[in-house]
Image (cartoon, rainbow, N blue to C red; front, side, top):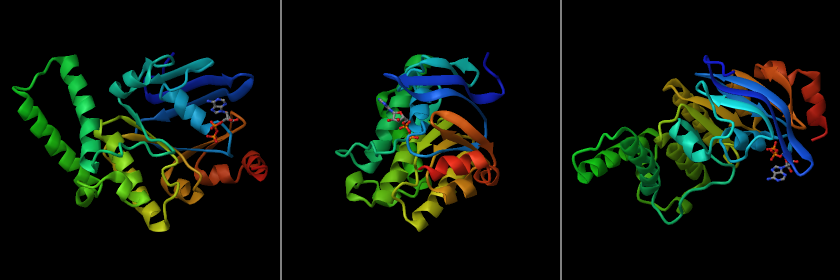
Length: 255
Ligand code: ADP
């Protein structure tokens, strides 16, 4: 049964790919307000776990629940309406659109669905459009993207493209944000910026779960870390607890 006090509950989840068990009885619970780190050697199942949580893959066994509701078989589309957003290891921005338009597309999707769902039609499409533009402007300001609003994302430095991805995921106003290796390819200054951004996201009420290889980032950002190895949870605790765990040290020696 779902734990109502937990935002995300993963209960004995396994995922098989033709004979390969990528996840093997994984259980973990994330409370609202956490910044949770998921770490582990390459091939340990981190991305598969994100894909199961966010509905891209269906678990072979086990249950997932989000905000007190079972979501084991829910599709990505339903999950984003329910308040889950994610970013990907490889950027997935719309290259033909400007930065502002990338944010507008994300906003329009959520607002349009909200209008259908709750039948709160605004008096006129023009007002709706103006509100979307205002909201997009707020998001661009908040993530330090206002100067790049009219640029094509692909013309911008990689670190800024990563920030656009986070801003776009946050446009939906999610309760849970899943970040897949947000520091990959970032320089030291950009990593510091990312740390500030993730903290401010959490402080504004969105729970964050992130997969990360950069242990420095995990150590300074996450209160609690879950370590996967060969599809199993081998340790969980504060960053300093898990790096001292013999199971974790052994798992990383083979990496
Ligand atoms: P990590 O993110 O920790 O590097 P992954 O979740 O990507 O690990 O992969 C875990 C295991 O599952 C690996 O052995 C990988 O090859 C396998 N795997 C992941 N996705 C698929 C897939 N779509 N089809 C087949 N095997 C996959």
